[in-house]
Image (tube, rainbow, N blue to C red; front, side, top):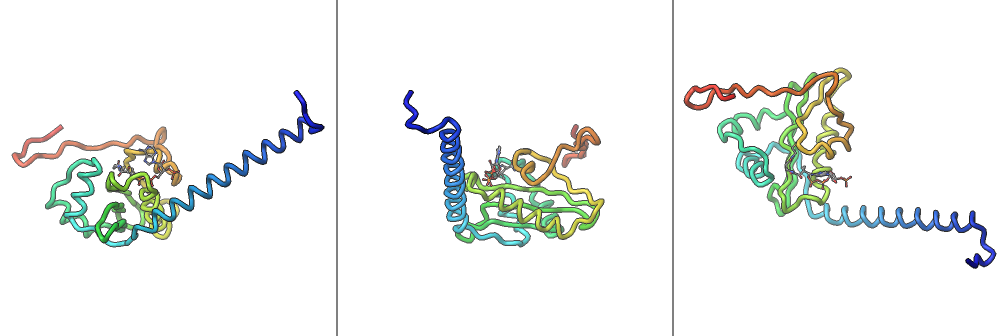
Length: 180
Ligand SMILES: CC(C)(COP(=O)(O)OP(=O)(O)OC[C@H]1O[C@@H](n2cnc3c(N)ncnc32)[C@H](O)[C@@H]1OP(=O)(O)O)[C@@H](O)C(=O)NCCC(=O)NCCS
């Protein structure tokens, strides 16, 4: 094949520069589009009300929670972030715990109509800003991950092999029956 006086090394260099420039351009375009999309949303740090909390859990596919318990629990949150679209919550995240030694990240959810636009990441960024300001060396920061891929991006790792996550399901139902 004719090489027009260009060496293999030069060709490889040109190919590499083209490849890098393409990656940078795609990255910039992706960031630009994401920022434009995110500009349509408002992030607020405020405890979410029970109606929107239950609605967001339901539509995002999380398990239903009892209303009475939600009304009692939500004001006890250490931290809560909401994402609003047209003043309506379409995403949320909470932190519960004692505020110094133990922090649990819970109720991370985004309305399916608004998923895949960077809102889950925004929620976790806000949560982590709170955690970094409140946790000390030796604090436990935990979560139950339905979507580990999201939390890995924020430095979360499996607790194994040092410890196993466990749940207790022996709660009595309204008739007093122990459910297991
Ligand atoms: C998990 C959830 C909150 C993510 O919200 P989202 O707005 O769609 O997430 P984002 O668009 O901000 O994505 C953030 C990153 O996580 C990744 N991610 C999100 N959902 C993912 C999935 N299901 N599988 C793999 N990666 C996923 C994205 O690829 C993205 O990566 P990038 O920022 O490097 O491009 C949302 O899908 C949801 O509400 N799911 C149902 C409820 C749920 O499972 N909550 C978690 C309970 S632990």
